[in-house]
Image: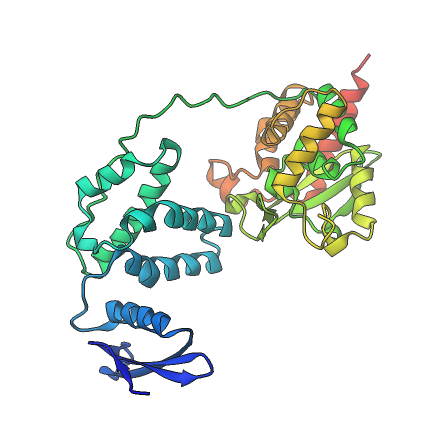
Length: 375
């Protein structure tokens, strides 16, 4: 079969479904602009696409890339590197890729980046709903910033362009919280379901929803404090809406321990001692942790069945903070630390490092006093 050539490099059949690409590039390794070879698995068309990407990256007379080529050549590799280094969560990358596949690529992907003008961007934004246009525009700006960096265009046309869609009035977020008594009632309603343990971690331990799902059984510890048993739970990872686990939390300070008081601590410790599938404290039954979606579904269904008013799962953390301050009387600086907030002073940020036993002591004492004050 004759060798198939393009105007830059070559793409030949290497057998077994592989293609051999040859091209010229300066890899900045001291060898200068020399010939390179790369073997990929794929069709001839996929080989041509990869050769086109390599030309955008390496050719001395490289053409102006399309938006799609800029995304594949520069933006996506950098995003994957940020995920690997922990500077971006995998769920954030998924959201970006969703915007790319649904909105940017179909409308702008085949345009040379030099043809992406402010009016083109504005017209494109007109067809996107207000809830999505901001994040799609942010991603387009990032792609075009890289095109400026690699000297494909002189300036980023997306800078200064604002979404022009008419925004509907945002629905006010539900800010309802539970009192301590209401929290006990809600937890009683979901006891026996898969939502029980993560609800305890959120409503009585300050966890965000994803944090409550990322705990492993062998990480939970039992601590005796003020005549009670406290479950101390380290928070170092989170599970997303689909149940995928990330070792990156919302902020570096979010890595902490939470202290669960009696009697709920006994249930958490029992769950940790059980032979849970995959070793997760909140298992999904098939080797992974419960997903946020499933947690939310079970939570709402169980409360509805028990005729108990439900609040959004995210508000369990707000409830914990409110109960801690106004009903348990825990000092605000301690509550902030237990929530994983870094604080504002130099001492709070860099020097204040309380041990898990301190949290257990504060929480158990506060609940003992609260119960003792009840008539």
